[in-house]
Every structure is written in structure tokens, then in C-alpha cells.
Image (cartoon, rainbow, N blue to C red):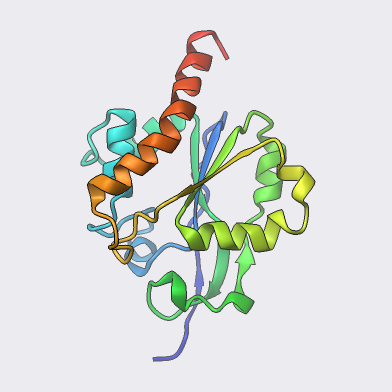
Length: 183
């Protein structure tokens, strides 16, 4: 099977973004359905549902609306690349073209944190952004989270959820507090 050039999904952008969750590149199921984290065994929507107190089975567009209301945006570090299959490990690193996260950050001065959904997202962000302009990102909290992908099977869904909650709950509480005081 020849390696295939693939393009990621568009940014899901909250008008006011305090948390940006970055993946690496959507898997085949997500690209086919044109939905972030569409694989039925990906635990992203289960975890976000627990964190935000929403039913993870509601329609995709409703889930997106809720996360936007919570000041969360979703995107991937990689805009396009060559990758056979769905595994991050199969991404041809030299083929990666990054999304313009620097421009996103400049448009969202209220951004407080970037959460990386897995090691590959963090690795690609470091390569394309952090190493090139470390000063720019100093004001942000960078959060490394276990991948919600079913390929990352060393942790059970509940363990992944616990780790995501431990790192994101303090940030989400700040979002709620900011909203209550009118920001």
C-alpha cells in the first residue's frame, strides 16, 4: 500500500479561546466522517463529556457548540502530511506541514493553555513552533495528555479520563470563574 498524502480537518474555533486542544492528524475514520475523534473507540468525547458534564452521545455539532461555549477550540498541529493508515507512528515526519497555530495564538490573546492529545501532537508542536520561537509561547501553559486514540491502549479509558481531568479541571474552573465575572 502506497503512502497517501492527507489533509486534516478545519479548525473548530471558539470566539474567545482560553484552551486549545491539539491533536496530531485525524485518523482515517475522522477524515472519512469529517469529524474530530470520530473513531468509535476513541475516548476523546467520553472524556470531554465527563469534564464538561455533557452527554457524549449528543450530535456532533451540539458537542462542538458546547465546547466553543466553554472557550475551547480544537485543531491539529499538522495540516497535511504523508501517512499510510491512521497511526501517528506512520506519519512521514519530513512531509509534515503545520497548521498556522502562531497566527491563531496572535488572534486569541486570551489563550491560556494548549493541551496536547498525545505525544505526537506535542512532538510536532515542539518541532514546528516551540524550537523556532520559544519566547512566543512562554506565557502559555503547555499540557501533555495521554492520547485518546484506541491505538494508545496502555491505559484504560477511565485512567485516561482521570489524567485529563487532573490537568484540565483547574483550567476549566478558571474558565467558569472568568465567565461568571463577566470576561
